[in-house]
Length: 327
Image (cartoon, rainbow, N blue to C red; front, side):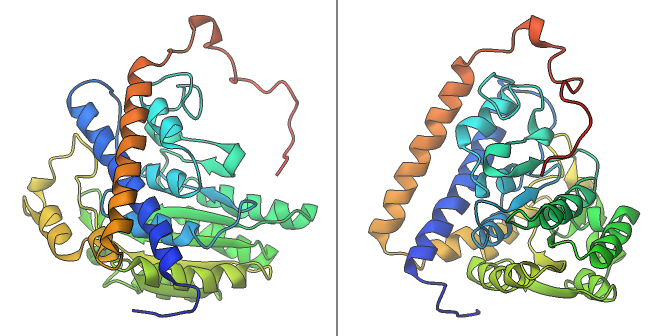
């Protein structure tokens, strides 16, 4: 475990609150999805909470985050409320995009969460461009792009990382290597954990690997890389996590891995349980109660919320302000 003065008890409690909120939101969404109360695609980040919580804890309010199809945790860690995330999956007007985007298109500019994309690797250039725009316009903040190991196997990453280096775009690329790109083992594609970071380093940028089983380690390394990126250069972080749940709720993952692989990994390596063990019981129990009530109320609000009116279907399809970029 890495140790720094910045990783203290207050940080542990804050990290635990964020990780538990992600865990409970993902669990709650899966529960109501299986009950048929919501529908559509759903890709759970359960078990991967340390990456989102650890990295976003190192960011400030002016920093931009983009995400992928498995992005509920990134949204929550950046400050999007459980109400807004769950409301969006219920397709209700209080959701992040008023019920239009659903699970893979969460978006909340009020906290600089610039959104997800169903296109694997699709938001990598978004983040690099947003970071570059911030620097060019003299505005504060950096950009952080979350994607999975499959996203960093796409050509768009090679193009983006080289462009970011050439243009000195202040962007941190975060690879959540969860071991699986759908049914393909990440080790078959890249090699052992840390291999993706080594490939990124070959592009001439600072690249690190951290074991995501301990959120303290993720937070400490993220602080170092965020400080570097604030100087005006891109950097790369590979976080070793594990995809506990199937690729999506319709995925028969028992066809390509053991039926209990995810559950067994969580039993042995749960990053949330490790962090909880470091808290005083009274601290952990207070957060447990707070988060449980937050998610319960968010699901109730999702059930009772209003659906978008039919006459609003064409809203936000075309720009009414002309073509421009305002970072």
